Image 1: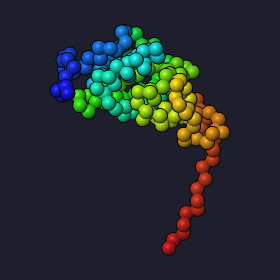
Image 2 (image 1 turned 45 degrees about the vertical axis):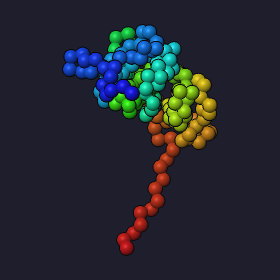
Image 3 (image 1 turned 30 degrees about the vertical axis):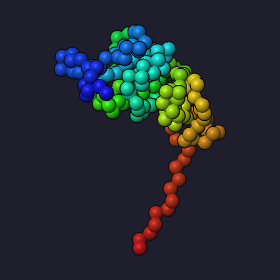
Image 4 (image 1 turned 90 degrees about the vertical axis):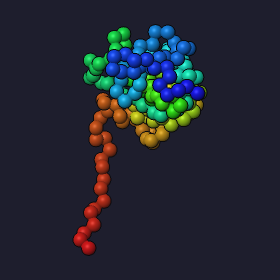
Length: 178
């Protein structure tokens, strides 16, 4: 087992972890808040990078979500990363190394990425949620169906261009004084 802090190097005031040796070449890396490093792979590098982190001891995918950056094409990204409307964000955790990695892949304007189910079976529900609420297509997912919304629901309610107020909210009458 690696000692805590193994694979880290000091750069100024921050510690940055090294990418695994079998990580795809050309992955852009940057500092990020609440994580040891943020990686910005292309869609082609995405699964290979996550597989390299898993092989190097990142035993847990703690979160996977999608973000809609409609109207925020000017958001800060490292040089060399072309912003798209949708982004898939994956947080990997190594308890043995005491390290956390964030992987941010630009999913395109019609969002599509490969599924991580073969690497981390626990992402099955997280990918279904991102599909259901944001419309991200995960290629290779074993059951990409709605998980929160009814099957006949049209659209993806967390997208920023989704019409607000389509379903009226109904409240019960408040009980009177006792």
